[in-house]
Length: 278
Image 1 (cartoon, rainbow, N blue to C red):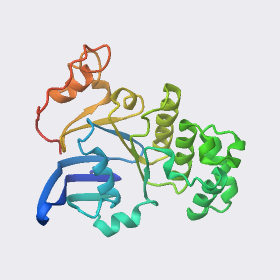
Image 2 (image 1 turned 135 degrees about the vertical axis):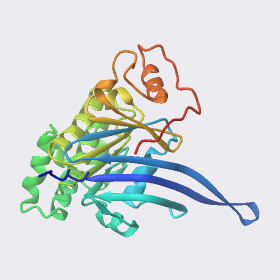
Image 3 (image 1 turned 30 degrees about the vertical axis):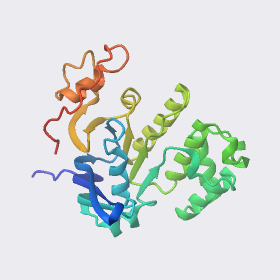
């Protein structure tokens, strides 16, 4: 008897996002930002969503969480464990089953200590012993116990991101969306941030890593989804990013790889499109 394959923890199909803008004279203008994006994430894996700035990566994350701006109009399908989610259902899961790791430490409360914030997350997650759960979460991210007495402004960028990771993982979410978690960090802090995402996946979450930094993503990702100008154009295995990219099937993906240092700095040609994945 055949066994039904397990549903991805997150599926996005033909996602489209437009913005309604009003110009002088109340003239209405519709700006299409996401034109058809598809991906899926399974429990226990990191999927990297790669693309240039403005390609629609962060908008996909916001659409999944149900936190698009009020003037946005979205269509397409978002599923969680195989269940279709409307906007209300997405917002209901946000912060519990589906959590966002934002770009910077601004997500932390500047007036509260690290310990208070992580313990609060443990309480909201229903942990029996919030203090012990907070200490365990911080220790798992190699943070010294003394960090509980510090305020966010006393943390380095890498430490702040690890604290955010501890808070986000407190409720054992099934989906973690990390939106550009590494810009501005020194190499050691980048490795820490990415390693934290890998640990979340190894603990059972499905992790969507939204980034334009391909080389770093390849150190922790299981698969790479590539988007260009609002469309998903390719999906590739991590092992295909080798040599000059001969195993990469899409020209845009190959050009992104070849543009990295050591590959001749050949920038992707604008407007190159191909068959959408999914």
